[in-house]
Amino acid sequence: MQSSRLRIQAIRHSGAFSVHANGSRSIAGKKVIISTGGTAKNLSLAKNKAISEYVERLFFYEKLALKNKEIDTTGLACRAFGLSSLWELRAIVRAATSEYLERYAIHTWWSQTYIRHVLEPVNSDNYQIFLKSLIDLDMKNSFEKLDLIRIPLNNKSVVFLAIGYLPDSGFVIGSSAGSLKDKESILFQAVVEQMRHWHIFKTNQNIGDTPYITKIQSFAKGRFDQALIKRLSVIGEQTIIAPKLKRQYYYARYFQRLYLLCRVYQKNFIDFISDEDSLCL
Figure 1 (tube, rainbow, N blue to C red):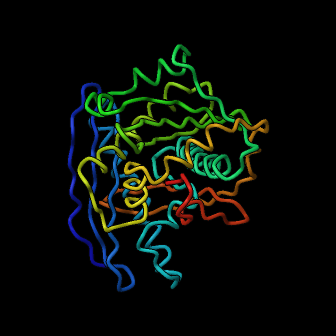
Figure 2: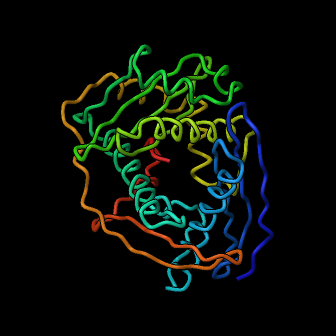
């Protein structure tokens, strides 16, 4: 399996660092482009996050190739379950589970109007933490308005969805899931994802012309405006019931290092991403 050199780029913000990892690999005769990122208040941790996510994507494609399954070069299938590659078992299970619940909750909330959400008021504790997490001032100043949506689950987990409205039309989103007791960390990660999406939009990045990039651009260009307004106007009454999840563990060696990976998924496969009208990324 031929690979291109892994390219690392670091960006310093006012209160954190962002690191982007980019590369490509020929797998089963197809060129797979991988582009990942990590953001943290520490440069070393941001780099570790970016490379860890790169390993997750690379492992996913190579595992499919070994099973002689069709390679989805768009990366959509990779986002249909939670996958994490860190170094400590409890941390990777938590990260992979949160990633899956985040997509499951947003997919369910967006498609089922009876699902409850809370629009956080500007003077709420959660909203103030959200504002303090906005480390990229250029991004913050480009938004005409900011909304913070809280989507609760029945297992004491919560998803925060950050929405930044651009002047005239369009919006940029970021989301994250976890336990409500860790809300500062969840809100920071939601802002980090929103920042990554904003940079993709502003720099007009076209990383392999994936549906992921296409959706980010569609959100920012106003194609989903009316659908978002309609969904936010309906306040459902039911809390999302967290699904029963399965786990698989793997070891893999990349870049002269051994990684432990955890995959979290449901028995009944749900493709969160392929629906062009879904808010899921």
